[in-house]
Image 1: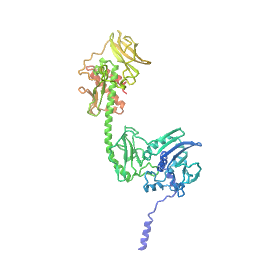
Image 2: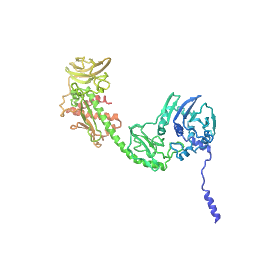
Image 3: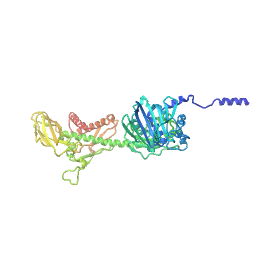
Image 4: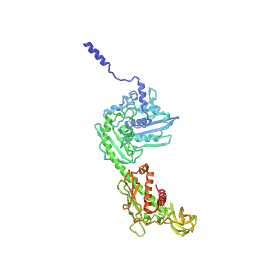
Length: 606
């Protein structure tokens, strides 16, 4: 029996053992090449300086003896000293994967990021040789050299007149694939990668690019948008998750990064499968999610271990997601309303400009001429069921109103353009029509002072009366034809020209009956979703509103981009206005009018 128990213990003991490295140098090579991003390697070197309490870090990119190099200098504590006060390079070189920083963090030290003891090996993805220099307690300078692919290291003193405080790390020559390493790229990467580490430590980092002859200061990246304050607390049993999120305009550059203790781990949360959903993928959020308790893959420092710490992060962010989705929904609704108001203003402005070029007596229903003495301020509410209507006319100072004064920006500037109004018209043979020269400054304000005008007939027949004034009378010839009239406006040395076309005909369209309703001005619009119905738009006479079916397939198609949607709504406006302004006309005449109005309106859509 005792012999059987002994054999059983031996067999049981033979089934277990400890893992160990079979080839130390092969393991070191794998670790050194596991970092794939040279910019990340530079960030790790700078983090070493921050961990050493450096206040200033200078990164220099240049060329020496024909070889490109990268140098990082700081004024930190330097390499820890041995018992004789000499920098303990030997410990650094022989204790890979056994970081002193891990021991310090275990003793309660804060503000230290490193923990794996492999940061220096990442120089393999940057250049061929690393030289690290620092001063000892004896006032002398010492250095260590390592080469890519070489298992040995070299320690030696370095002759200097004065020993500098801190550490200097030099890598040269740089690898052929990254010799175009620009200082600007390093600046932008560090500004995002070490954003919170720079802010918390107060370190000042500058990049000197001697090849480009430029110098850059690394400032922590600033996010755009509105900072979100009222978010639910993100607290786990391992610690609090720091959230700094901004609601920004939708765009490809809006993304939320995942950080650990101030250092970026993942540039975009949606790179992780667990966060490939709204609100993180909405394109409306910028900022950071910082969880100091996450565990990272040692080689790249950009991979996250999916352990219980990561699970806690995902669970806590679920409550935050609900709040963010609600905020984004409100933001989108507000944006749609603003876009609708802006679109209405654009359309109405385009129609006003078109009606300046069209015969006023044929489009009198729009009441533009009466309201040209004042500016009409329009407002819109694009949410479904809320009509968009003209607001009350905004008073504009006129002569005799002493209590109304123009603001500075309302005064017209120098002459910028002139326009014939109407630009196109129809005049019966032998009849007369008046035309006006509309002069404007760059901001489209009317220019009224220090102007001279000159009208002339460029082509065709007819006569002009009072050709040196702002308003001219054109008398048509006794036979049909096309006549081009031209006006030239001059103010000091500025000269502007424009032309109009007069169609002289011996027959006009039948006179249109007077509109049933009083003149109301340009209407507004609202949406009514009716996807199963064929109508595209309707005109509500009482509300002076055009109702647009935003469930129609044409509206859905046009909504793919703003320009197409704007033109679609503009054509619906033209359809309803022409139909309303020319009652009793034949279909052919209505189509002709719609083409006419659409042409002159879409010219002014911007």
